[in-house]
Image 1: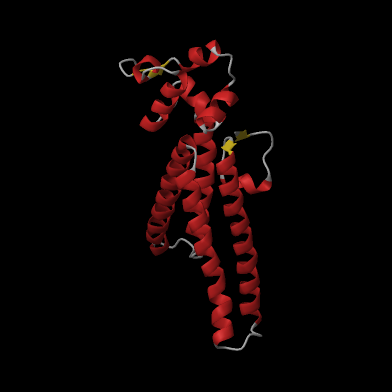
Image 2: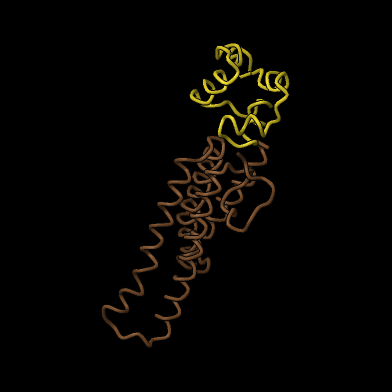
Amino acid sequence: MTNEARRPWWAWGACGDLTERDTRNMRRFSLLCLAWAILFAAATIALASGRLPAGPLSVAVAVIPTLLALAVIWAYIVFLREADELQRKVHLEALAAGFGTGMVFMMGYRLLERIGAPKLDMNDPLLVMVMVWALWQAVAARRYA
Amino acid sequence: MKNRLKVLRAERDWTQADLAAALEVSRQTVNAIETGKYDPSLPLAFKIARLFGLAIEAVFDPDEA
């Protein structure tokens, strides 16, 4: 069975129509992403406030979002493993494009920094990766539509 | 790779969604195979052939690009 009637918010991570299994796996992935984003933001605010005492509590606040991020990766791997084969092909193309572009951007921009380009935040290459991943998915899904 | 999926489906009066459900794939996958934009994996090709009760070479023609 396919689920193409409407696209709920949690289907953001995949283009094209989804089978019921893909829908279930994408929902789990998206909910974990949301939980991670909330926890990450909360941890960032808590650590930046300077109110947490140095020690195990600070370490826990810094580490817990990362543990949840591992669950996000696991959920995405499960989605890919069980995905409809065309959906998997689209995602693998998007991952290759996103990861590759992010790497090239990161290495290439280091050279530009040496000739005076403004310093970038460590997160900027990640943003490039995610944007290219999403864009490539949309383009690839259209190609097979 | 050419295939007769659209004809076989039409003969049975199935929609793409019907076929997708029977094959446990998305409708987009059925459409992409029918239009020749995507060649299915070997397991899916066998599944399609079995569903129509045909040999795999009666559904797919590897000689035609």
